[in-house]
Length: 340
Image 1: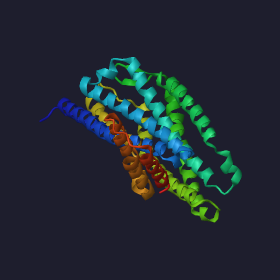
Image 2 (image 1 turned 90 degrees about the vertical axis):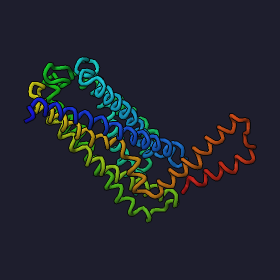
Image 3 (image 1 turned 45 degrees about the horizontal axis):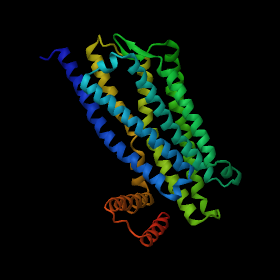
Image 4 (image 1 turned 90 degrees about the horizontal axis):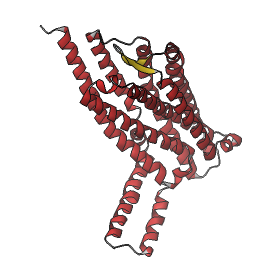
């Protein structure tokens, strides 16, 4: 009959392996998806001055940073064990500071996308004119500064406890995390804002035909509104379970002196983290599944832009630069294809 110690060790090993393999998978899909998001939303002319595309671009950059950070943490833990965190108070703090900066940025860029889409599809002219790209940049900059300051303040309160590991050591911050940070700041508030304004934007876009707008602008509004709505639905489904788990863990950390309970806690943590990680990789895949127009745009960027530039670059190295007369028609064709 197996002892309790061997069973707990087996669960811990399985949790470590689970974290490692899910980390590798999400990292691969996350890098591909977020890089393609950046290519599409920065390369196509119709997205360069679009505020919602600007927020999605910031979200994708934040997601990439989080993915790189998380895979580094996963590889370090798999290689050196818990000692990589348990032995360093600085690493313990840095882990939560970076994670919270990326989480806040991700959550509220989704909110800003929903709010912006509501404003840009609203029938009120003053509301549409009020939301500009310049304002969006200011708001994003101010919020990212807030996220950094807030995360440093909260993350610095994490410390190493001999039996508990890296946990919140300050009672005030424990109460703050329990009653405001997890349930409100990264829970109820972004979920309500994103859900409410994405639904209102969807309602607006259903009546957009009545407004006198160019067909290209109308199609773009309809496309982005549908993309934002589906992204918000995925966001709500993926964020709620992890936030509920974090509220519980902050208040009831499990001591390593109870091997079985600690091992089960680590496995549950690994499962909830893997669910939460999907939120940082899923944007591109939601867009490409639910928007046929976005699929054509991705194809345009990959084949007619990136591939042509790469081929032109290779030809330049081999001293076979194409004449200007051949380049101009191709560029004009690319610009016309962007309106697909």
